[in-house]
Picture: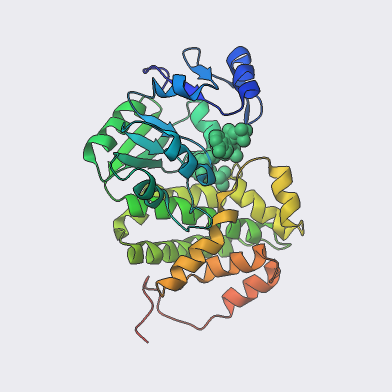
Length: 315
Ligand SMILES: NC(=O)C1=CN([C@@H]2O[C@H](COP(=O)(O)OP(=O)(O)OC[C@H]3O[C@@H](n4cnc5c(N)ncnc54)[C@H](OP(=O)(O)O)[C@@H]3O)[C@@H](O)[C@H]2O)C=CC1
Ligand SMILES: O=C(CO)COP(=O)(O)O
């Protein structure tokens, strides 16, 4: 966005902001990628909020920080977030957090298959900007669409957010399978396909449209994250399969893996709606140490047979 707009990047850590501003690189989170010359960087939130991206404020933190930042943004200007997950504790998706914190402000989410490293390098990427407010999604497209970034719009905020959150859990699942002693490509394809079915099932129960899950934030981000080795969630699964314990994996990762924090919430929300999510359930059992990867796989394979349809047959 900095190529075409006046963009100010705010970071909460003053030393980090100064190092990025002087060194023109984010050595901690994206080393080796030069920051655009036009990008201004500050630890002064008021200075950053005075500008914004094309009149927008964009929150680009883990989901755990979204609520606090929404509270801190003072005005009613259009607000977007890039977070993908469910908030731990409340179990809210981003738009549910926003409804509680900023009920009158135009809000939305940008999501889709987009490893940060490739976006930073200007490699072709397609995203979706979703909001109930058509003016806001149009403003998001206008702010970010460019030569290497195609931005589509959507009004299905629930579908886009469910896709972005659940694919992280499913990427842990495919990482687990791919990290097992005899990884199988058949098993990975089965997990992606049946994972898409359970993501869609939850989305429909929450009010999303089925077609959204065939789009960038559903199938698109699921394929990317479940198969791409740049994924932190997939990496968590690979390391779990190698027998490392979760606290050590998270300490070594140094970045957020939202699936770890969302998995139990996804399952709880699914259960409260009577939605079956067996792959998510298996991931939760492995994350919480109740099943080994091998046992989780055996349990999934041992489930009763059923039609392939997304919705289970009536009892
Ligand atoms: N990386 C990717 O490829 C993509 C990530 N996403 C999503 O974007 C979100 C952020 O991911 P990502 O940037 O990769 O995560 P990282 O863990 O790599 O970086 C987290 C960043 O958020 C900052 N942060 C954390 N908490 C707060 C807070 N309370 N206030 C202000 N800043 C805070 C951290 O700053 P500090 O160093 O001070 O802690 C750090 O700069 C996630 O929800 C992720 O799913 C979406 C698309 C692609
Ligand atoms: O959301 C992402 C790509 O679209 C990044 O995935 P990870 O958080 O698993 O790295």
